[in-house]
Structures are given as C-alpha cells and as structure tokens.
Image (cartoon, rainbow, N blue to C red):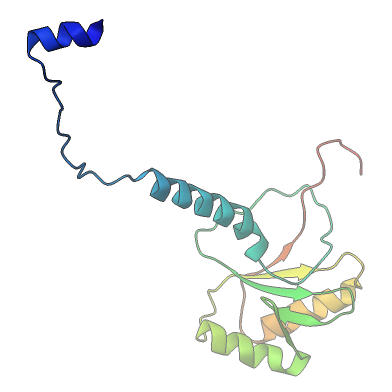
Amino acid sequence: MAIAAQQQRGGRRRRRRHAAMSEINVTPFVDVMLVLLIIFMVTAPLLTVGVQVDLPKTQAALLQDPDEPLAVSVDADGRIFIQDTEIEDGALAPRLIAITGANPDIRIFVRGDRAIDYGRVMQVMGLINAAGFDRVALIAELPLSGGSR
C-alpha cells in the first residue's frame, strides 16, 4: 500500500548521495596513548635504584631538595654500589669524583642495609668524605603510622 501511494506521488524513490567522510577518527589513537601512559605510570617506580636494601625506620622529616642526589648503597653483604653498579672500596672516591665532575656540592645519599654493621656504613661515609664531598646523608624509611617501634 505504501508503494502504491509513492508511485502516485512521483513514482520514484529519492536516494541521497552521502559524501565521503574526511575526518580522522582519533579514538583508537587516544586509547593507545592512555594505555601507554598507564604502563609508564606503573613501571616508573620500578626503575629506581636497583640494589635491594632493607632500610631502617626513622622519625626524621623528609628532605626537600630539587637536585637529584647520587645514591651510594651498601647491601647486606657489605658490597658498595653507586646507583646500581657495584664498585670496590678503593675505586669509590675516584669514581665519585669522575661522576660529579669534582663538584663537592653534590648531595650524596648513603643507603645502608638494616642487617649491615654500622661500622661498615660509617667506613663508606668516611671514604666519601675523604674524597671531598661534604653533603653526605643517610637514607632511612619512615615507620608505619601504627606507632609501634
């Protein structure tokens, strides 16, 4: 019945011609970028200093320093690492001088494992200080907020 009514009006159906869409669909691009952003946000904390050190807990306040410090770690076996590269005791001072460009104002953080002898950590700090670096600090973890000591 509808066909008969349409034939009476003109006999022909109108067909619209659609022009090709020239816009770029950016939704897949945005999806990929968001996934990459999430991946980098998750993996970035894992890219810190690679030496596993069990840090002691302390009540001291956090230091706010805009410059990135150099990290020297002493693991549970007493081995010394600059960032994540193992180094011998005798080569520590020359390597630090070479890395810092003989700049004594560079901040150096010493990370000592909780199980290591305090004397070993002080020996490493003495080697750093003897090389001419005065801004040497110890790193520790903040205790849990439960208040247990």
